[in-house]
Image (cartoon, rainbow, N blue to C red; front, top):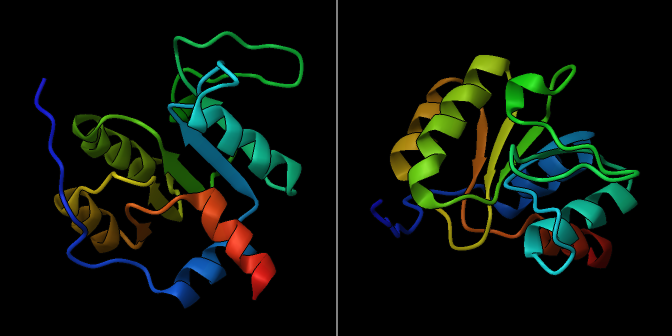
Length: 145
């Protein structure tokens, strides 16, 4: 398994990020952990506490009261506005392909994650792309604006 660490060649502007967060309602968190100590768990719970409908995607996690996990994006009922990725870089292209197939509106790669080829593919399919940014930090910044 190869690790690829890329820097975004182009990224969403602050205004685009603000628009994505203000218009989105349904967020799939791919790689959401069932472990409360993990960042993906904290971010997913934060988003849910701030009015978003969150769909945790992790085939290996156990559902608990108030936290139903989905094995993949295709298992989520209805459309998704944002696919927020908390997975290793080599998993990103397949996740982006699935998000495009399912009609997601935005691909969001968490801090430290960027895949420029997958981002170009997503943009060509009409999706917005945010790379190497934390969705929770960006949402917190909205409150300061």
